[in-house]
Length: 146
Image 1: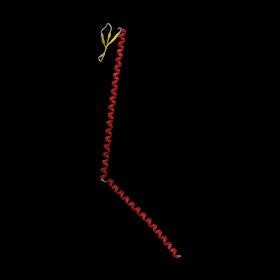
Image 2: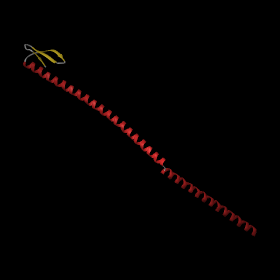
Image 3: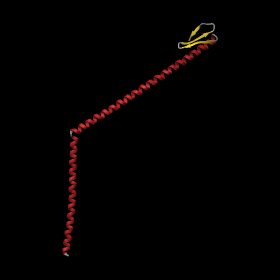
Image 4: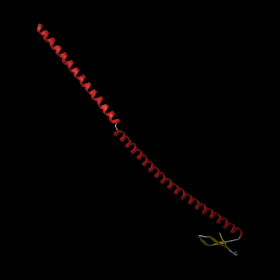
């Protein structure tokens, strides 16, 4: 029986030592991983501080700056195109408005003159309409250019 207890005790110690060995292996692996991570971080820091990284950063800054300038130039060109189109539309609208107002004003003047002539001088007849004006003829009088 004593041999059984000793054997059992040895097996328990062996089991305990195996568990302790596994635990030590796990800790050793984690420490190794931690050291390798630290080394990776050191390598990354060295790379970040390296000239190539600075050159790459400068290259990207130049590229972004060029892109922004290109977009700004395109925006300004489109804006100028829209401005010119709007100015042209406004100028056409103003020209049509002036022409309509001039035509309307001419019509009003002619209507007043014709009305005046009818009331004061008697019947009239329209002789000629051309680009220079309207010629009317009043009975028993000379021709007038309106």
